[in-house]
Figure 1 (cartoon, rainbow, N blue to C red):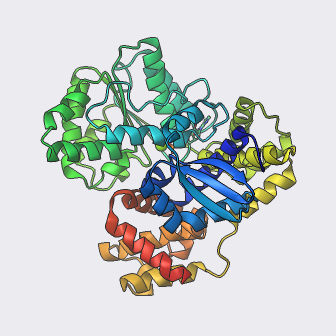
Figure 2: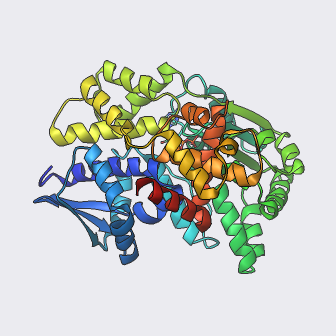
Figure 3: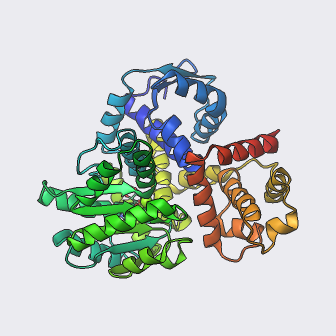
Amino acid sequence: MEDGKRVQDDRLWQAVLGEIELSVSRGNYLTWFKNTRLLRFKDGVLTIGVPNVFIKQQLERKYNSLIEEVLAKNQITPERIEYKIHTDINASSRRLEEEPFQLNTESSERLHSATTITNSLSHSYRQGLNERYTFENFIVGSGNELAYAACQAIAQNPGTKYNPLFIYGGVGIGKTHLIQAVGNAITSRNPSTRVVYVSTEQFVQEFIDAVRYKKNTDFAGYYRNADVLIIDDMQFIAGKDKTQEEFFHTFNALHQANKQVIISSDKPPKDIPTLEERLRSRFAWGMSIDMQNPDFETRCAIVQSKADLVGIILPSDVVDYLANHIQTNIRELEGALNQLIAFCEMRHLEPDVTIVSNLLSANKTRPKHLSARQVIERVSKHFQVPMDDMLGPKRDKDIVVPRQIAMYILRSELHLSYPKIARELGRKDHTTAIHSVDKVENEMSFDAVIRQHVTDIKERLYA
Ligand code: ADP
Ligand code: MG
């Protein structure tokens, strides 16, 4: 890709970012990576543009090897990586967002929510919605048809039926896409409708800030004046008692005024630990829908439609291969497709099964010298929790947290599958592993102590 066209560079970088996004916590991704771009690759030097000196230092010191590794997976092996402060970064990421090829909509969604976090309380209505998430580009199939139908009904007549709508299901299966599609459909029909989309993490953070800066009333007023409130990833409200109370009042105010509330979560209300009973019973007033993994045909249709969007024709065996090998997480499926397209474009190759199988198996390569057992032992030593307890049934907090961290590291470092992670830790149910990984990832974004534990453990692992 020497002197490669800018578009190709962008595409490559999107593929790289897509992968980094899967391997670092959400908070780290937002803070260090989201506003970077590939400036050039020339004479063996790959130059990455970054918005400021802090990010430059952090990438140089902490993330250089991760970036190298991911580039290498994409067969790019520069002699040197340079980080350059680049003032046009914000404009350029906007430009990128407009590019039709950028399949990884999740990252731009995060970009969006990151900006709104910094402007909390000064936002206007219709914030947080990413117009890329529409009903039109949502593939309906087994697993999501019920949720789709309910969302359509709400978009036509908000506040009348299914209120609240509670959608739950695993990671990356389209919950955010679908609930944002409702918001987009409503605002496009009636632009003055006050649609508020907010992630639960952001809601929690804004609430904490509001209390701290004594802007409680602005906060409450903002949410209680919404016509449609869409709140994503409700599981993160677990354990946040004050926020739950605030949400309870917001919910009541909206519900009484026949305003629509839409909630998503990775699990049903009854399985969200420490969800207040009164909230749980409020959620039961409306409709709860379980979103299931898409079946093979639906996954194929999704791949096909994403390829169509960027004007790429994929042979059907390549589509089948992707759909067969990535079964539960559409985000991963998109990431793999993105990577395949970038790889082929750069080398002027036609996508075929050999290429895609090589790329997917390269993704799976992991530090060979590390076994799952070694990871768990390292965590057990770090927290001084005996291995028996790590692998045993006890549910005490000082055992559960190390166990969850072990699961997180097995995922982020060894890229093990969730069922395998569960087995390694003596759990029967792989959803425990999914939740643990997600939880640690989430906590790392705001909890410096957890972050430090994970960093220390990783350092020792690779020492
Ligand atoms: P979740 O919120 O459930 O974790 P997302 O809504 O973020 O998942 O979906 C992950 C990615 O997969 C998004 O880019 C989304 O557009 C895409 N996606 C998921 N389901 C579908 C679908 N049925 N049709 C088209 N794209 C989908
Ligand atoms: Mg989501």
